[in-house]
Image (cartoon, rainbow, N blue to C red; front, side):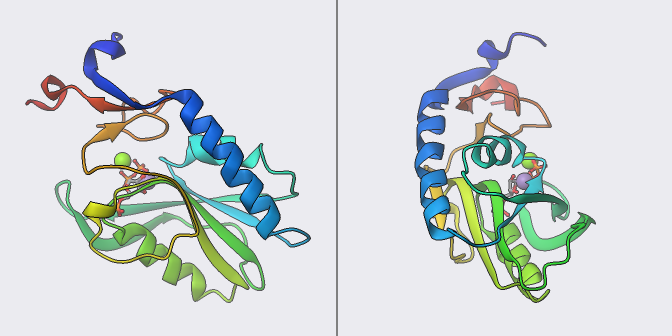
Length: 182
Ligand code: PRP
Ligand code: MN
Ligand code: MG
């Protein structure tokens, strides 16, 4: 139970790679929103790590808010049916909103979320994600900031879970087949 290393197959993105990329994304975001209001919206629970690490790199007075959504109907396949489990506390009217995510897989969660937030009268809605799986996309989502495009394989760490575990790893790794019964 405690031997995490035995559950992992290989490190895909090291802690240093992730943090270096976040430096670049934060600098870009600072530049793009210079002199403007900015509300970061983190999507629980996966986005917790990237939200914390990105936000503290910004030389910008931001607000942070959180949403919890359930993207899956039954089983583990994305259905596109999204339910709000916890809504924002903030009023989005006239705000610059930047949705912060750990990963875009099928794109169904973000596609739904972006149009949901757009309907609330914000000035702008953009997306920042640490990871994206281009080959897994079922719907096209316009994403302003992407950390890394990765192949379609199951990854954990840096907020990403398998059965709620491995979120606390500071790096992104592939899971050993024995963990998911392979
Ligand atoms: C994961 C991930 C994204 C979403 C991406 O969240 O954190 O939010 O799935 O999938 P999609 O692009 O196919 O919609 P999950 O629903 O597992 O919840 P979690 O963040 O609490 O792990
Ligand atoms: Mn998530
Ligand atoms: Mg998950």
